[in-house]
Image (cartoon, rainbow, N blue to C red; front, side):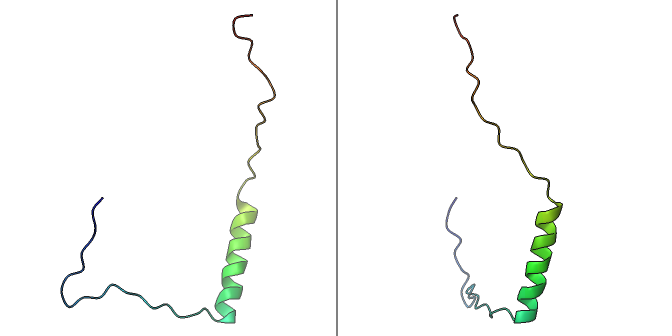
Length: 54
């Protein structure tokens, strides 16, 4: 990938504003709902050893 050059007279710099308490509260509520709906993945352990050449 190459660099993206800014055209003349255009500035791609963005200054974000801090979130309000209400926005943070809504975001945290949304994230907790999404996390609770996502199924948990089980970790598979590799305790079995294959018998190769036995």
